[in-house]
Each structure stands twice: as structure tokens, then as C-alpha cells.
Length: 199
Image 1 (cartoon, rainbow, N blue to C red):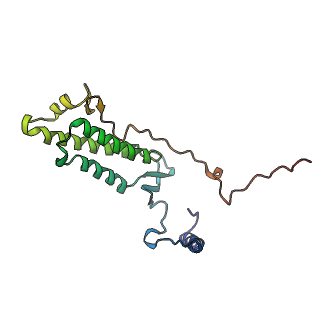
Image 2: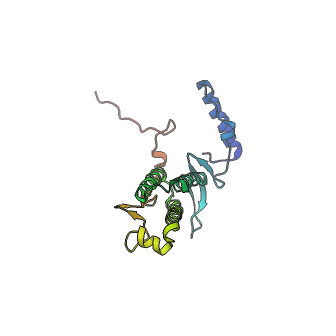
Image 3: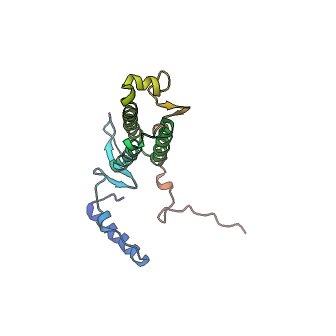
């Protein structure tokens, strides 16, 4: 991160490359680029970008799950709810989805992720509903009211089977890291003066 111009960032990139070279390492050109923080960039599954806080004129740097990461978990949900999986029982399906969604959410729980968790759960809910319709439509002509009556916990739209509920990603609490700033030790952090040893 550079507080300056593009030229400053490019100069720092060259300096970093020079430090890595004696170690036998290099910056991959296809993965290394200089961007403005307002444009944002993806790193380790997160999109990091400065944006205006809704309802204010203040700008903050937000870390949210990237579109690619969200698409990847949706693909996993789709894979587990394909037609080919309809031989499974409903409880097994819920357990499988809960495991994969909670594992994904645990990784992203330290970002601004609540909206992404809710969106992924809505997608999963729709996939489960269609899975049930395909599984039972041929015999019972099941509709959404029937799905709620037969496959959701009483009085809710939460899927449940034999004591297993669909918990999804939203059950994982979002816990933001505290900003520590200069408290993080680096080679450039000024060290406090040590008291002289007494004789």
C-alpha cells in the first residue's frame, strides 16, 4: 500500500522485485498490477476496495468476498443439488450443504461478509427447493406450500429433516479484526527506548 502516486507504487514494486531476486523468487507479471484503492483488487478470495459508507460522505476500505469466491461456493452448492444427487435422502443433503457452506463462511467471517452470506444462503435455499420439487414432483405434484409443510421446521421456512436443520453460511458470525495500525510490529516500527540496566 502506497500513499502517493502511481510512480511511487511502481518504484516500490521494482524495489520489492530486487529484494526477492536473491532469494530465487520473482513477482508474477500476470498477477502483479498497480491499481488505485478506489478501483479495488482481489487478494486471497477477498475484494479490497475503498468505498463511501452508505448514508455518509466518509470513505472506508472494505474487505468483502470476491465475486469469484461467491461464484465458486454457488458452484459447489449446485454440484450437490444436481439431478444426479436425487437418490440421496434429504437429511444427507442438508448435512452436506451445511458443512460446505459453514466451512466457506468461516474463512470469510472476518470481512464485511454478512450480505454475501445471506445471498449465498438464498441461492442455496432455492436450489434445495428445486431439488425437492424434482425429487417428488413425479409422484405427488409437490408445490411450495407442500414443501414448507413437509420439509421445513414447523412455522418456518427453514429446511429440516430428522433433527438436522439447514444452517447455511449465515449461522457463522461475522467478527471484524480490530484495527491495530502502527501497533503491528515491522522492521520500521520505532522501538521504545530501553531503560539503562542498573549496576
